[in-house]
Image (cartoon, rainbow, N blue to C red; front, side, top):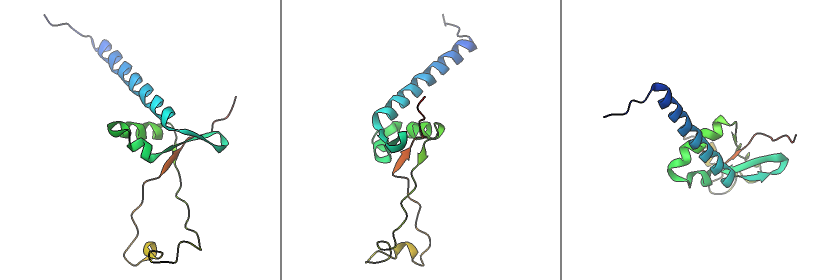
Length: 112
């Protein structure tokens, strides 16, 4: 005999699984991130990718939690235009491909 599962029980179970998954991602982010000045937290992209199959869920959670990709540092006047590869970004071969951010930064945490 097959057990009959009502729709509400199925929805409740799905929601419970989502909560457990979200808690696991939140715990992972807490483990991988570190404090930064100004009360923010920072997490390295390499650490996220090292988590393997869960990295997509972590990146999605960071976006939903208002974490922002860190802006790439601007090229300095003295270091960006000389040397063998200094003009590579400004060559006539088109725009250089956009690189993924190296770090993600949390929104500021305001103490209560």
